[in-house]
Amino acid sequence: MRAQRVWKPVGADPRQAEIEQLHLELATFNERIAELEKTHAASSKLESLKVCAIVLARQIDEVRCSLMSTS
Picture 1 (cartoon, rainbow, N blue to C red):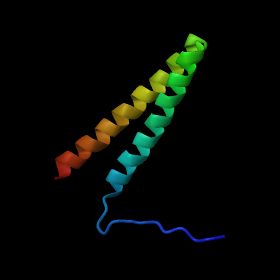
Picture 2: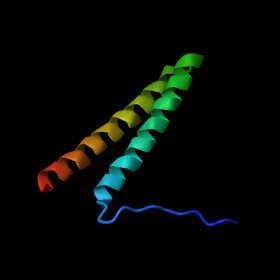
Picture 3: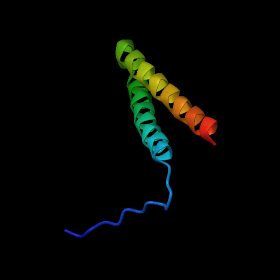
Picture 4: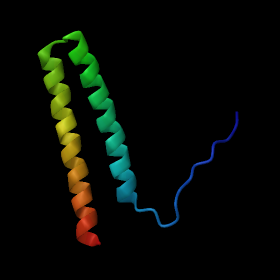
């Protein structure tokens, strides 16, 4: 098994990494929502995913605001 390099910028802010992780999760939810919308899936599933996506978006906003207040 080959080792993989993990690049970590010097002085990287852990909150920025948190934002990036939340963006990845949000993208996953959005992809799943788009898939379900194409198949006309049950609206309860769609609504549940949309609520989760909104919660993630709010978390991203909160972390961004905390970054701005400490700058």
